[in-house]
Length: 35
Image 1 (cartoon, rainbow, N blue to C red):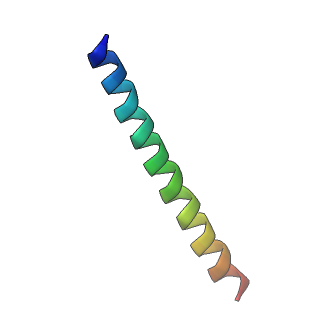
Image 2 (image 1 turned 90 degrees about the vertical axis):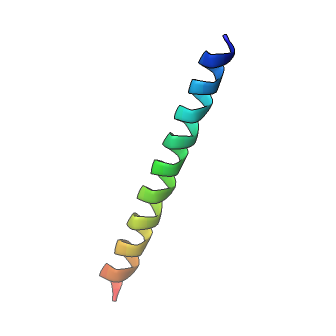
């Protein structure tokens, strides 16, 4: 059970990291395209 929770937490962390990376890239390209 503990291992399952740990893996879920790792997956969540990975998802959040990917989301932040995608959001950051989107913001950068959006700002770049406006100029």
